[in-house]
Length: 494
Image 1: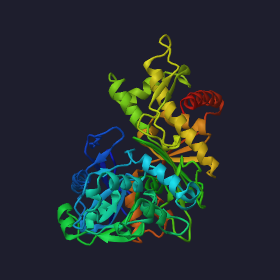
Image 2: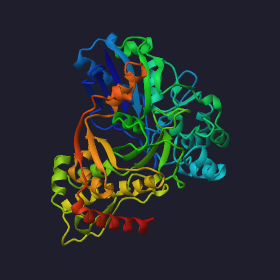
Image 3: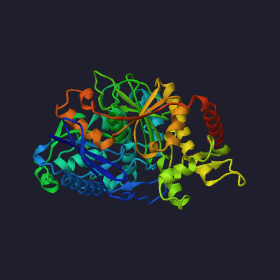
Image 4: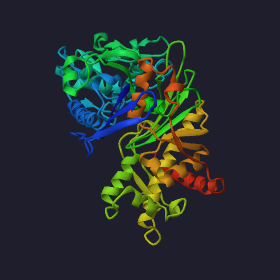
């Protein structure tokens, strides 16, 4: 028997098929081959058409089915993961009312700031564990004020994974994890937040049925079965946002365990077992995949917007003579720790939560035309990203996270020896790299949802650790000096 995982990213959609008994990846594919379009009509805006997610899912799914040769009736469960915090609106006939306002869109920041003050900062933090910030609820408030004709037509609101589940099944549902990432969940009262919906004027009817993170949430409809070549009635048995799911993919379920990613944006995600929060909401707290009323499991999320996108910008605008990221890493490795005094503040991808929603832009400090080279700038960029992680992890430590081991997939920035060695040395933590990704994790979780695996230990028993990076203690002073210099420049800006 086999399990499918769908990963709905902002760059591409990935589909993975695994054999349930062994956990072996049978086939995987992503679409499109070039990054999906993000529309930005105004500065700070970011929208995508959910139909594009579905179109690319079908293309990747078709390629996986063709490559694997697996029969549809042998697929026993489907798991879905998605780019967090996006807003999807449909009418009573499940027609889209507008493009999705996605995670990196910052237009709703003022709405969240006003709500934080009006509801009360202490009440928001003790009940929501966050400021309403720039999350899904605040995005919906923007629609209500600026597009009232659309707001009046809303039947249901969804997150990106809920939309994919709707296309697969014809049914609309949302998990507690999803509600919490939208800042709709009251952790004190274990219900949809009356504070949020009353302040923003959101009808409770907008919310779909709450479905379990693991379990039979819906089944594949006849229409979707014909569209995808699946068997009608195949269970959709798991869904979660990309960062909780990435943690799951790395077998991070319990208090003190830490996961990280470093793609377009960067994340450090740790699990807590008590209702804790950052008083300035610089890191955010959501329900983890195994959260229940009886068992508190919260994911503390540090997000750095300006991560891989900085490396990508440099590749396409600065290091155009280099053919690959590997070549960029090789050139950066010629520069010493600290990049000869050069510091790059990497926050050039919109407002940063870790900086209390300030938009500082990216900046270079200390450049000397007589000594600095292209390699120094490339290394300083990677170090700047690492230092932004450490800046945020200090906040996580202050609310109870003990960061000793960081687990990550062997992908994106973690492919760079400079990035991972600098991160290990600055944070004084071991880094464990695993051969997995979000789509694989969603497929394994689908097996938990149908009961094929008895628990997470069994589901992730075949997870392969491929490398361990230890801090360079003999060079740690050099890393910390570079971090102190970087932090000094940041403090001057903010």
